[in-house]
Image 1 (cartoon, one colour):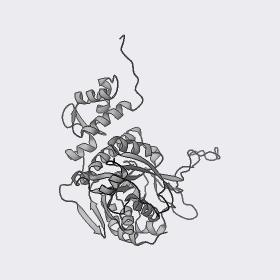
Image 2 (spheres, rainbow, N blue to C red; image 1 turned 45 degrees about the vertical axis):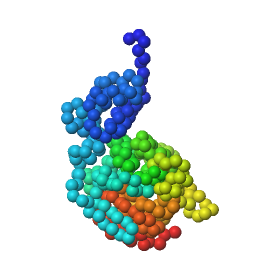
Image 3 (cartoon, helix red, strand yellow; image 1 turned 180 degrees about the horizontal axis):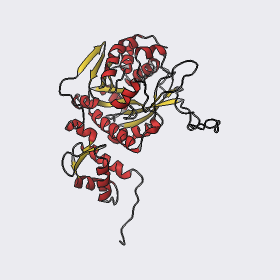
Image 4 (tube, helix red, strand yellow; image 1 turned 120 degrees about the vertical axis):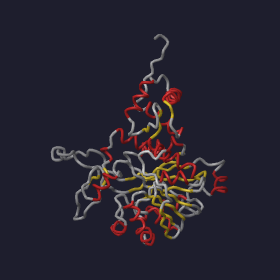
Length: 380
């Protein structure tokens, strides 16, 4: 038709708009409402494209409570308990020193948490939802691998399993985006203004997690680089390593990104510090600022023996990170994906109060036994 603009949308643009619309609403929306709001964000979006995307990704990404109404699946689990393990009773809690560990789903816990009651978040979440699904965790614990790669032994030392992030499909990445966007929106009310949110990631998925957190309303403040040699990358082509002996399929990973965000501050940083005690980072010393590069080695045998979690980070690194997160040394550190409790142990070691949430019974019991022992370790 003459005068009609023919706009081509970039790949993923319609998807992103749908996720933003549903994520901002927080409840079921009619198809008409979704189409109107998506079209308000983009130009000339065919209704058929929106409907097809919703239909093809239900029930993987979306939940349909009634005919022609949709909402994000993660939000549906909170509102309706659809396809989730929503706990009706009060969650179990384990205490050690200043640390409190809850056996709960962090989405449920955050929904019930008092507003403006958390001063910082330091967490190492499931980078991809696939490798921490019950099926893949069962394979890992049985030594079968699944999506967890079991690397070969070197110098007589058995290596720990690593998740195969390169096998994640497009829909897995979409689910990851929805997961972190929903998590951040639930997290925001619980944070005080200026609260630091430090999230472990990896070079292959950090852009997905960062985009989701930023869209939710958190303010990006950079990245912290953990300098560490890992087992990821550097391999020659599979089944052709002799033919292409001088080729690495991808660079050998020698660093790990930790995304740095914060809840927007009230007024100036100095005003926020006076009122909330947050808005910056605690310096290691008066003459040295907190830096964004921290040298670190792999987690040692002693710590792995105490807490045999596949993604365990060393106390020497975590204690520096946790200490920095409360600029005035006062407040509560939250780890909503507590795993083996290493973040809570680090907070205990530096004298901070902390809260951890872990829904996996296996890791919850591991954390109960490891928090105290990790906290008491003497590290350099």
